[in-house]
Image (cartoon, rainbow, N blue to C red; front, side, top):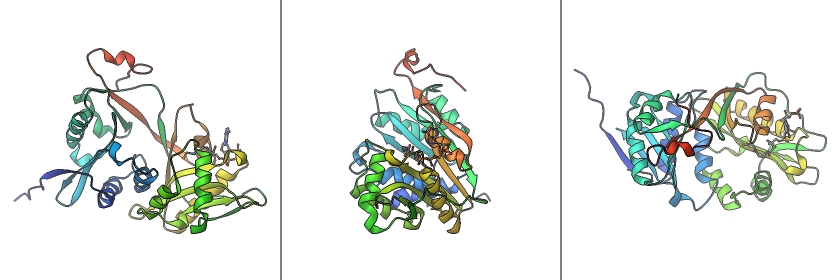
Length: 310
Ligand SMILES: CC(C)(COP(=O)(O)OP(=O)(O)OC[C@H]1O[C@@H](n2cnc3c(N)ncnc32)[C@H](O)[C@@H]1OP(=O)(O)O)[C@@H](O)C(=O)NCCC(=O)NCCS
C-alpha cells in the first residue's frame, strides 16, 4: 500500500529556528547552480539590524521537512526556494506574495537554472525581464588552490574578537554606504554556520584591516561560500582581495570543503568582483534574472529594456 505523503502546512517565520529550517532546505536541494547556500541566508538575515518588519517570510513544511520558503522585501520583491520535487508549491508562495504585497509591481529573483519555478511564475503572470542588473553564480573545486601572496608587510589571519571594530570599519569602507554595524556583525557571528576560522582579514602594517573575506561552510554538502569580501578603497588593486579570499578558501578546504561558490554582479554595472573571482579560478555556472508582474494589461512597457519571455 502506498504511504500517503504528509500534508503541507504553512506558517510565518518566527526567528532563528526557522532560519535553520530554510538553510536545511537550501542544503538539501543544493547543486553548484543553486541560488541559496546556508551562508547567504545567515548573512542576508543578520547583516543589518531592524529590518524584520520589511521582511515578511513564510515557510512550507511537509511533516518535519521544509519544502519551500518565501522571503519578501517590501514593498514588492520576493526571494524563494522550492523543493523541485514539490514545484507546484511555487504557486502558493506566489499567491502569498501577491496577498502580502498588493497593488505594486512585484519582482522575483530567479536563476536561469531554477526552471522548476518558471511554470508557476508564468501562471501568476510574471515575465522574465531581459535587462538591468543581474548576478552570476560562480564555482570552483578546492583542489589546487594557489598560495596566498599578500603584498610585503601585510599579514593574513582569521579575525579575532578584538578585531571586530576594525573588521566592521573595513566592511563599511568597502561597501560605502553600508548598514553593517558592530551590533549586526555580532549577530552574524552568532548565526549558524558562522566559523571565525573561516573569516579572514589582511592586516596592514599600521594594524588597520585592509581587506577581509568571510567564507561559510555547509558541512552536509562540503561546499563553502564567500559572502562577502571587500578591500578598503585605499588598498585596492594590490592583490589583497585575491590573497585574503585564497586564505579563507584554504581554511574552508582544511575544514572539509571540496567546492566553493560565490555570487557576483554579472552585468557591467559592477564588474570588478567577478574579475577577482575569475582570477582565483572560479567559473560561471548560471545567472539570475528578475521576473516582473504587471500592474495591469500592457504595463510591461515600463520594464527596463523590455521583457523577454524564455
Ligand atoms: C572586489 C574587491 C574586493 C577587489 O579587491 P582588490 O583587493 O582590489 O582585488 P585584487 O587587487 O586582489 O585584484 C584581483 C583581481 O581582480 C581584478 N580586479 C581588481 N580590481 C580591478 C579593477 N579595478 N579593474 C579590473 N579588474 C580588477 C583583476 O583581475 C585583479 O587581478 P590583477 O590585478 O592581477 O589584474 C574590491 O574592489 C571591493 O572591495 N569592492 C567593493 C566591495 C565588493 O563589491 N565586494 C565583492 C562583492 S561580495
